Image 1 (cartoon, one colour):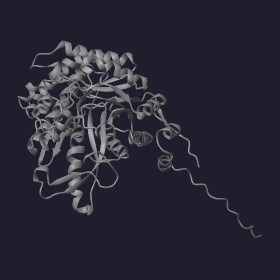
Image 2: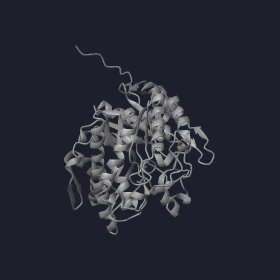
Image 3: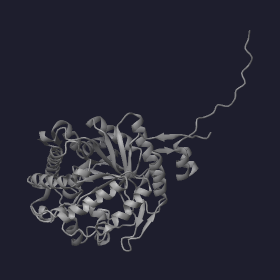
Image 4: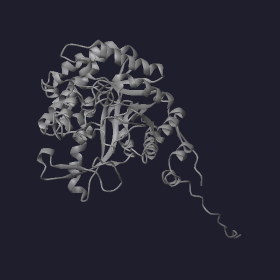
Length: 460
């Protein structure tokens, strides 16, 4: 039986894409990631970000045109602290003018800017003072935020204070995959605490300047499962869920950061959210591992079943969006934006199905009355994917981008996403154009029709 339907999204829903300064601008030579790249052995094939997508050279204008042609009505991007404050206490008006032009260009194309104030990179001068392990960084970040908001805030309604604080803390200070490459649990916990205080300071700073601004942060959430025997490994899952998924968010509702053997009161962080952002990509299998004391005796791997991402990054499981939206909205009581969601797929073999499954999960959450306000796909154009660099397996863009020639090529999924954005809806007709019929039938099975039954005559 043919199934026809339309999953309508709320009026005013934001559709767009997300980017980050270091990944698209190019030529960032004064931050921690630039130094990390130069050291070698830390990024795929020792690559450096180089020109990236050449946004600092002005190509953001053509990419914003591409987004507008796809009917995006919002775009999330970040400002680079090391450009705006290249030396402690010295602020560069020319850099602020470039970001003001980006905001104006988005507004001119009918797109709502969401501005992220910290997305993984720090100025070198800040790193030399201990970075986020130094409690004074909180005040330095607040000073930076004040300068940015005073310069740009007239045309910005949505501010994102910090992107993925627990990813920054764990990758840089526990797993050693991000700068500064440390493997120290105590340092990771200090960074998490100071980033929580930094978020709170940024929130109060923005609100003092513009009480009508809407302020949140982007939280990376993982879906988790355990191998057999589940009872043996469930403690490891609870630990990852508690530390990585929940501690930072719960601290904003309680004013207390609760970590293993460490509880810190941060009363200034309580109720410092107008919205919460969800970054979601993978599901991981978590197990108890007795020989990993530095990693809290646990191991996190990609499940063997399901669709796996490249390498060992995790299982591609878009249905996990619903459970993460549910928990974040219930815990914070705030509206939610999906601030990042995507799939690495250079051949565009999975992206269209991934979009359909992801947006079905978002629509399901809305139908359960969770206040989801927007969906920002990661990402608009292929870019420098941190430790994965320009690894061809990690191409997330709606548009392919050759970092050598700067040539952009739209992928088929770009048009499908544009059709969804234009309609503010996910329809059966769009889905049929996006994915094979057998996949459509598996996701949206028709209502079984009972064969006609001839009943015996009633007895009198």
